[in-house]
Length: 285
Image 1 (tube, rainbow, N blue to C red):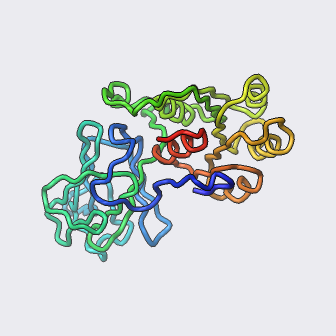
Image 2 (tube, rainbow, N blue to C red):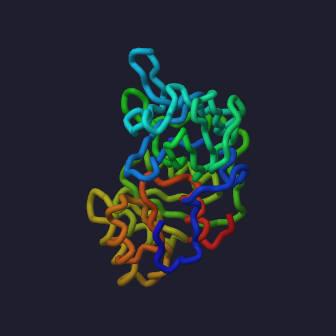
């Protein structure tokens, strides 16, 4: 996360203590992202009811859902069936499967067979292989490639706490799947949402009425999002509208220089998106 003048925004991008809870306890993440610490490698997997973590062994016909073999799993002491992540009531838990070298959560050893809650930002160790867990906002698609809403989000009974406010967020994003994820997440937190897919349409919105916050992708079909940023900061009569850029990390410096208040790297976590939006809107999450 990078900021310009909204310096008070602090996002949960590091490890958290076991048992720490946050505002997303009842919100099912779209994707689990595992960042292999000490390497540039990232593993992404869609959330399932159960996901075995280990290293594949074709001779033994063992193929875990999250395969750590390509990340030097054998030399790091990862067992073939090392641990399992399970989903219960919209929450994620991890259990060690009596692995040879053990599993640790935020440096605390897990007792084999006992479930432990997982939270955004937690660190896991499988033997000597260390990963950080992120709950990422990434749209899910069916086998035809069409966007689909996870059933758990459709039927969730314990929703995100809706804040009493009339804050309006303008989302500028040409990927309809990503826009729907953002829309769903922010709408459930109580925001009024307007979505457009181009700079021209965005300019029309900001002329008709000022949003409280703008969430902007930089890769748009008509103009670069940086052009919109520069216009808002230099030519618009209200140049201080908070703008959150959500885009690829290589564009960070350009976005901050052009006037972005906050830069979030895709895939962005649900919690980071909500925290950044609430802070930019002057709300307490």
